[in-house]
Image (cartoon, rainbow, N blue to C red; front, top):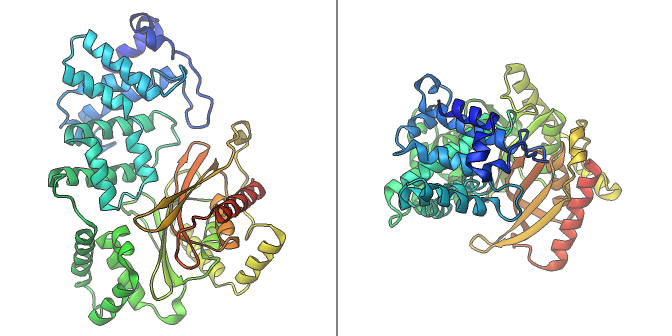
Length: 475
């Protein structure tokens, strides 16, 4: 009865009396569109979610979490971390750091060992790390997985933090959790688990990951009559980044479809459900065009669809292999065959329009974005304004510029950013889409038209100005 008794203690003021730091968060509102509960309610919901992972009757809800929970050595470590994870909110300063100190003192005061106290404190301090890494980093990059596994230290810490993260997100907002977030967190968890079991002294490198993905794809393609010479030629044109970003099953799916396509089939639009990404996967294969990303993002927004992730790959041959993971605006999976056919037909029509370059020129001349997104931003967003920020950093290893756009989430955001890239002569190589309630934190990896990073202050200032301009138009 952990959840039941904690709620009774909170209702009668016993919890705040016994634990004065908890009393400071009782009834404390969180003034954003991310959290819909007071801090104390959110905390007790989190503990309830953790408790459900332990009960066999709820194993069908989150099978992986229920399985992982059986491997944690001490459930009380999780419950205490959940109780303290937001306990320092509203005090000023970093609530994770302050809460970690509170948790450590509480554990020692109540007779836990130094090891257990440090473990609870570590979980509180890092309770946002798993979620932010999954949504903001390239979890297909072996180097990132190795670095993340090093932060986890061992399987025990990884298991605890994964369970705490799932329980935390589910306790934040009933509409926030969806199949895509579930698959994203699970993918990071399983990749990190493999890295830890392999040994941090023997990390998987990019060349090995590429060989593994290609071998898996070849094994799957053996079931189909695929021309071996044509397959080698296609793969030679794609580049290493493609084989790192896609799994073996995705590579096989793409190759089979591309090699079977006729010239008149372009742009090739493939859509499938039930993927490892937890959303509907839209794959586009066509010749590269400057306006491609902006037109695609606008078309998806006009259909009331939410883009959760975008992978932009340009082959050496001048063709693009772009993938968008989408859900309905409500956060639900796309349910009907008719809806899937509508998406495919609309995208094909929009990308085939001969007037698209003219739209691009008109947009540049008038300052209006390509296409119009009919959906309006949620009314509540105007009460929680987030000034648009555009930050730049250099990805030295890959010689690309990382552009971070922080703004209010709204329909048409991606199409507005895409238009700004066109105006400034920026090539989009990859995108990482992350939304936290009303706050969008999207990351774009870009170069100039000569495949060089954008490093000079003037070019960055022009791009920042253009992005803000188009976002203001959409808003």
